[in-house]
Image 1: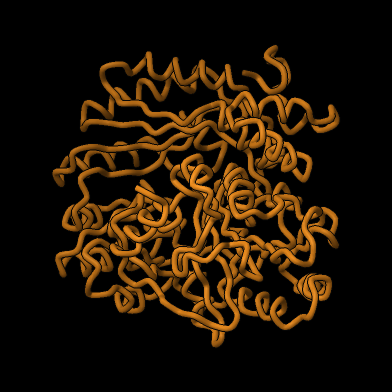
Image 2: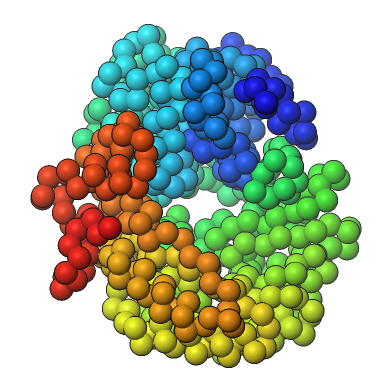
Length: 499
């Protein structure tokens, strides 16, 4: 299938796309493929918000599914709504969720024929800025590639940001105006000092899907947030109670009023959905209309008989919650607030209501973790698997900025792989274990703790082919005084950038 035919096929299956032409237009780019981008509630919300502004339109573009095929086509990266080259737009806005999406940002700029480095661009090039979930933690590695970064919740700040750009008569004037905004970082003017993140007015909540499509990770699902933020204090989490004043609740009636008649699947999305005081009523109300209901962030201590019954009515077959720590000692250390008894009760509730499986998320490589903590999870996993089939989703711990665990070193690739092997070996034949890569977690860690130099290293990695060995070589070439970004724990003989 050619690239134009692929775009046409995606558009044909969408419900809710906005077909708008306006004097002032923005290329709204997501640096991952369409299926990931259109599962992003923030990206869809900004798309709708820009298109709601008089005289302004947002047209979407994405990292192609097959980057090499697109390169070989000789076609520049284009927007879906107009098949217009991204480079023709006066403004390019990126939504970036994860550290490793920086590689996709670089590739989308290159496919557009735009120099990736902001310092190589001139007045004839578009103004490029970024926002998204990454700005809650550490967006500094983006700085060499963008003119500005909108920090935090952009629900309301996107309007004055775009107005500042379109109303100014030059790039320099626009950037000086943006630099005066309290929540905008201008990489060429602010050094490495990031402004505070923005907090949207409660009247702007909730975020909800604009487009429903079958071509996403969450097939044909309408997303809406019943709450934003979290009132808990988990020490590893960016979205904790100290971030933007914790959790803000949206009333049940408002949530339900936004669900379109055409939506047969509804996802309730947020950092702490089960902490919403009306969550069981919301799920039951949606299930009463015959809709399938999905929830993010199920907390074990909030799982009641009524809620699990409602989830079962809403089509749940697997109950997913989190342990996060591999032992009670580790859960207590990171202030997770979840006990073995609560996880055991989750398994019993899942079995009672006829769910097929319990899935637990956890991290390995937390500060202070030992083999004994892994062994405790092995024994607990066996116990839970005797109650209901059990899956473990395991991720290596990555310390993030703006959290109490900021600055904690990465445990080491070999150490993490060894802990994963110990876990798999201990539960073999009893529990399904699926883990994310320790190597790529290390890459994420270096960027999460890094700055401009780490961002420039990503450019070198992308130019070299984007394999892990390319990333490792680029990060290993960083000056020695930046080694704290990639050191393993003291006493681990594996050294920095452990392969």
